[in-house]
Length: 164
Image 1: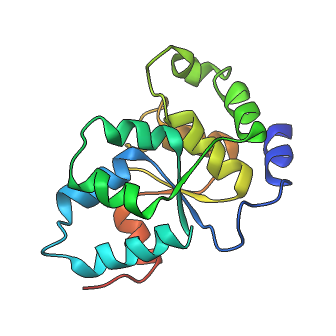
Image 2: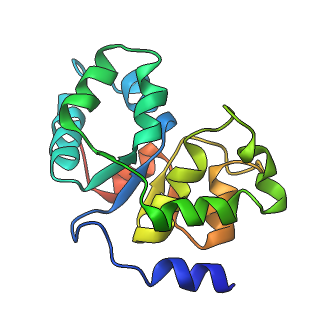
């Protein structure tokens, strides 16, 4: 597919950047891996965000801010957020015209999702999401359509060898 080769030839944001996080992945961390029980995970995530190994589009920040809790404060403090650049915006424009993702173009629906995928696609990052791989209209399906690697939070922990 021509779209994939165009997206993947662009220069990455930072050499060390490896992941594009979806809102659901951060929420998974907060709900299933509380800081008082899993401090190692939180310490590693703090380092990964500060060093821009883990990135998230500004639209993820907007979604997290709606629940304004300790998780949001932690993530905001470590600032993994990036503003979508022109190439990412172009990737979103293409993505939301694909038949399975036409709903993503509707105002207010799935705001961050296409940008999470575009960030991964443009900068050759692995997308981390808790969305189910069985739905043809979710992030994993969009990643598959664009040839972007997609994993869940537990797979991320394993990939980074984060243990208790």
